[in-house]
Length: 391
Image (cartoon, rainbow, N blue to C red; front, top):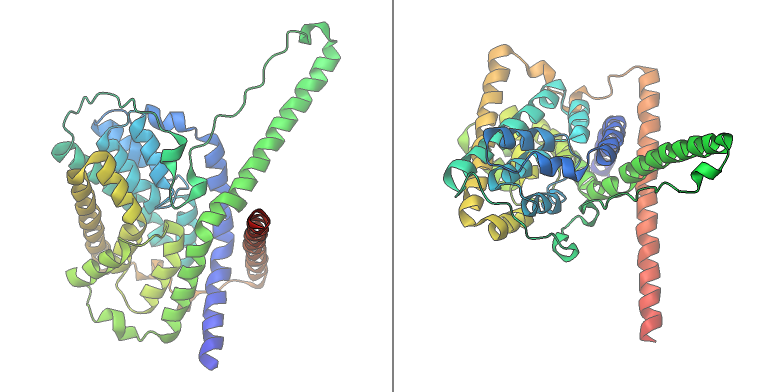
């Protein structure tokens, strides 16, 4: 019974610590979702040049797409004319980091991981894109892919990650000139206020709805597993692999097939750190886990061929292990262990800050509960409709 209580305490500590940063990340992600059009992404990724590969990595890094949600976006880019190398660069950087995962990394893992993760994601994405360019891109001046992206071909494990439809445009009325100027001014002002209000509503709706829905399950699983590791896993269980190549290979092999996003992988990383894994081995998991999964691998093989898939997997594994070694060297050489947060460092806030963290935790829990209630209502409606049809 005492273990269960300790498990609950560890879970609650992680949840409260991550809540305000997760809410901030969701809000920023919602703003980016509304302000960054898909056409902008397609425009800068059409060639296999170093510039295009780099742009794909930099553009993809802050976007709020998880490891499965990036699939339809990347597929749309590829079929809209993006090169193989640029598409692979986008596929690596986008799920490995994001504005939400950086804020949660700062809260749960400390400032070092918040700095290292986006840098590692961008560099590893450029590296993967260059590997594909030199060894799989048949024609660096590739012809544009004209195959349209149909609605039926955009399905993925994250249904809410499909490409946004263009916003309806307001048409100017030819009768507007017949109205008084004051009336026009009022309509214009009301229209501007309505547009701004609509955008704010869309940002909040996406952040607290679709985006949170996509990460909530894995986030809770990650928090629960991190709390379980802290509660029950002996310190020497994971450290038996050491800090070298074997430990990093194990973490890469654990992470690659998982369906987990950068934000949800962070609580798991806290558990691994608490269990005694080296910072570099944990970074391998944080890079390899979100970067790929079975669906991503299947899409790459189908759209870009087996050679591109092999280069993609090799690049993800070698880059993550390379950065893992580099982080271990960085921490030991410059004594940066103090910049890494573990569960033992949590709740060192003042009373006022703890109140803010508590309010954010209640708000986040409420949003999650609302999603659960909606899911249950939809299930009951579908079930009752199915029963009525069958009867």
